[in-house]
Amino acid sequence: MKNRIYLDYAATSPMLPEVLEAMMPYLTGSFGNPSGVYATGREARKAVEQARRQAAEFLGAEPSEILFTSGGTESDNMAIRGAMLAAAEKGRHLITDAIEHHAVLHTCEALEKQGFEATYLQPDREGVIAPESVRKAIREDTVLISVMTVNNEIGTVEPVAEIGRIAREAGAVFHTDAVQAAGMMRLDVRQTGADLMSLSAHKFHGPKGIGCLYVRRGTRLDGILSGGAQERGLRPGTENVAAIVGMGAAMEIARRDMDAALARIRRLRDRLITRVLSDVPDSFLNGPEPDAAGEKRAANNAHFSFAGIDGEALLLRLDLAGIAASAGSACTAGSMEASHVLKAVGLDDGRIRSGIRLTLGRETTEEEIDQASAAIAAIVADLRRMRG
Ligand SMILES: *Cc1c(COP(=O)(O)O)cnc(C)c1O
Image (spheres, protein in one colour):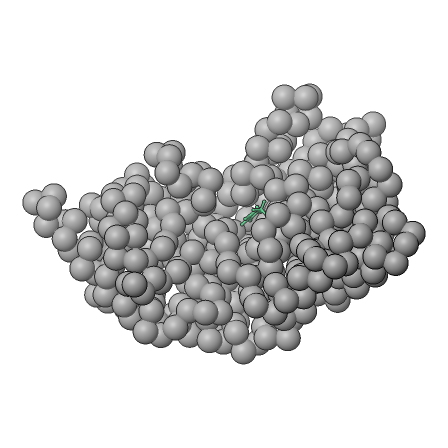
């Protein structure tokens, strides 16, 4: 079989063997409902609460501040809808920005249709949301500010600690979608000042369909589902025990391996950027300059444009060569809709049309990076030749 090179870790990541191993007992013998009073139910409950402690450790939170959800999308919905509904008598205004994931943007748009008001802040060319623009947008009736920790397309690290301080001063709830940050930087809700933080396990080697929402104690939040008393009644429904256990294990591993993994990933990412920019004429890096501290750009993200190239055509050719990359967000892949992120950072049509995202992970090797950059150079040259 031709070797396959996976460079789309921002879309999803493979589950680690240790994660599956931790999950197995809860898919087999310990299958009980955590609400059950008998032994197998109690085993499941114990496992769920152990995972809650692991999630709390991962985020610098208390276990009681962790709610399990079905993933990043649900966490974003729950945070934004829940906070707005809970404070509807105080105000109906929220502040977010134009480069959020669709899980945030489409939720805000849906709320607008229900009579809420949203302000969408514009980023600078590197994708940074200026804290000062947040401050200026705050109104008397602002309930919520939602700005992501790391952008999923161009890897921008947002100044969330500063935005968190501004939100606190204004008495607004601060939510951050930290789905792309988990495993790529140390997360600490005390430092970020986030009242609500969304995570998704499959982005850091956990199972798909499981995530959590951090809810700072005292934050007013309405549930968006009704049903049983699980997750303090805020997220009713029988817990996905095995997946919850898997996410806990993935968090533990991410915490343990973070420093070594990040140093490796960053070195390989920098190698990829250097190779592509030097080997492909008229190529551009989109997003912030990579920095050694990872304070400006996520360690695993590279995003390029190539003059005169159709990004979709390039992706198809890369796929034929066994290389998995992405045209930005997975939600727009396969459709011709231009990336809202690349538009918002002010790229021209040619740069948007030719944009491709390559995201690395812990399994990425130097050989893969060299093969991928050589393939990109050859395919771009070929596509340009065909165009004449
Ligand atoms: C992947 C992603 C999501 C959605 O997470 P799911 O668990 O796939 O629903 C939300 N926000 C960002 C920034 C993401 O990258």
